[in-house]
Length: 593
Image 1 (cartoon, rainbow, N blue to C red):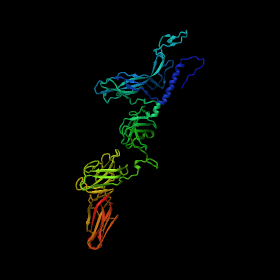
Image 2: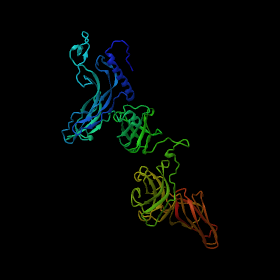
Image 3: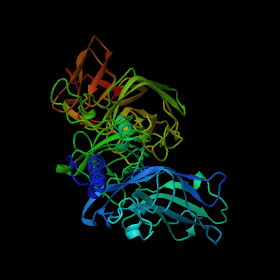
Image 4: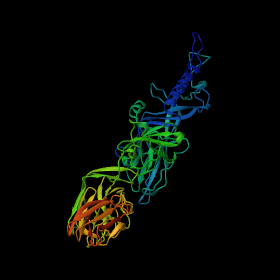
């Protein structure tokens, strides 16, 4: 900064009084500009109703900081200087009362008035010791030094004694419109919008509910030190909607810069990819990515959560560091101490422990219980572990707790699924007809109960000859015990493995990976005989039931046979004597998935 130098015995010059004030003003301006920038800042100037309430409002003490010419006009002996601008300080020590606001003349309408402010120089003539105004100064009289002139050239004219930096106001009226649709006018060039006063039809007084801060008003919320401690200058409030963050900050953001670090109180949870603007209408919305620099998927933002967003210029995106109360996106873990992504947690969809269910013949509902069940959005998707599962399935209803659609047709198989809603944490059970193919581990049709995106097949169970009524069954983990049905009942000799596919759907579901039951064989005479059961004609997994009788005799044996092809096995039956009539039968009493 510039300081004046004086010497013993020197003459006194006029600028020795006026120039130091200008130099001090310039130095203070540069300090303020370094702290607050030069785009205009307000401290104080709060707007409140009058007491008692009238159709005017009051603006309290405060300061306005705004760029202005060093000297717009000559100031005493100092010449005008409009080639340099500095951040000047307009000071208001007293309360300012506005003029009267007029209400609309049409019922149902309102009008918004914008109170805007500007820094202005104001030359005044004042004796600060007496308060007298205007002031006639004494001037040096070279002819008679003991008798000073009164005013310039002894004219008796008054002179300005101070140049004040003041806050000037003007009120800009909007256009009256239907209440709720009225628009606030924009500030005039060179003016700063501060407050919006909304006046409805028929108003006779104004209260605090009629006053709101202009959206782009650069009003400091607290002193600078307090703001540094509280971080309130970088804290904004979201006014957008789901997947769209639109925040306003105490000092409006006019441009985004590398590493800009902001906090936002979120209005609505996100359901997917999200954008953010720190100044709607001024700053274009940009994508929000997580810590892995990938688009958000949903659930990373929650209503009223505080979100920390940092601008990365190289990827032109806001990086969401965290949102309190919400899920956090992380990069895939590559080391043992890294946080893992949900998809990296090892879990196999379809796993469960201690699954149980039981229905008597003709029952119309059944309760499934399990200690744990692993459900998923896909075989390679997100997985969730359900504990303490207990849900009742009623096929006569539709949706959660019932069929996905339609009814449980008589004599069919119903695939029963556990369902989980990741958004709400709710658990359900539902069923679907097995159809023409095996039921998948994760429900693959289009009619799952709404929101239940994670599923797992629990069991396939039989429906009786009555619609929506069960045939008897018991489920224990992956095994289902059902009523016994006789198949492959005959005496025809088959010395090589022959394919057999004549199973009914209700007895051997297409989803069955194993079928269980017993096979019996009887000799008509003393002889040896064999019945073979296999998963295929290649003989895989074969059971050999042999009967060696002395006279008429027979035997039986339980089996658990893997089904390499749905509802298909291979068998052979033969005796050691051509005269021996070998009688055999296959009794199916359950299956496993």
